[in-house]
Amino acid sequence: MGLDKITLSLYDFFGYLLPGYILFVAASVVEATFTGFNFFALTRLNKNLVLAAAAAYFMGQIAH
Image (cartoon, rainbow, N blue to C red; front, side):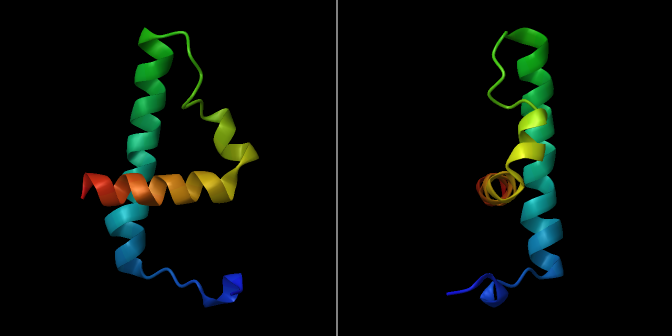
């Protein structure tokens, strides 16, 4: 199975991926403000874009 078989519709983007990224940013801000950990640090998004996108998609599914 190649990556060309994976499709992303507009519904997936606005329904799951975008809310997942919003949750990612909110978790990062809360974590940076109140704790000393860096588990949700936004600098990790640059290093692992595919993994962060997959995590944001599943976080959006859970939030939905």
